[in-house]
Amino acid sequence: MGYWAGTHPARLLKQGYPLAAAFFVLAPALFLLEESAFLYVLVYTLVVICQLALSNTAPFLALAYSYRLYWFYFLASLTYAWRIPSFFSAWALRHFSVSTGISTFTATVLALVFYFLIRKLPLPAKETGASRTITDQDIKTKLSRREQQIAYLLIQNLTNKEIAEQLFISEGTVENHNHRVYRKLGVPDRLELRTRYADKGLPGN
Image (cartoon, rainbow, N blue to C red; front, side, top):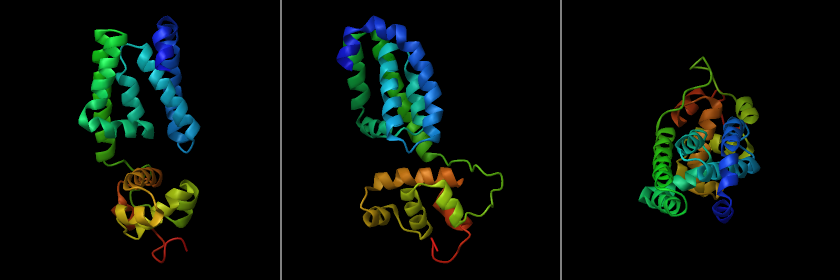
């Protein structure tokens, strides 16, 4: 796609703003239908095209992070060493302009800031009643099968490492699932999840 963009800059510039609008429409849909891998790939592709087409990319990457696009989580994890923004900036400087290179670097750094904010700040509860109990029915209707497994293991007070070992997944994957479980059930953390879980017997029964 990078080669295509380099050989068709005029076409990209003409299509940039409609694609940007499409991204803003698709991002909330992705947020609601986050189980769809196809939407992840589609929105990720649109963001890359917008990044190539527009001079100011910061809003797109920042919004992408705020909607928890996990492709960008991977990108952010690599950004710890500042290699990704440097690479993108150098590539943009070479193929486009100084302003594009600077804005690309700014966009990536801003996206990383959003990444840290989303991961570190507590999520607001969706329910108006902060003390509303969480039942097995809530867990079964609001969460995917994998998220249900994660939720019950969190209720049993297992650590991320213990959950990862039991489900044969990485700790990073567990942490990502944790955030989705908290958001869908309207709790800020695992302590609140355990406190508000109504069925105090064996989870899942």
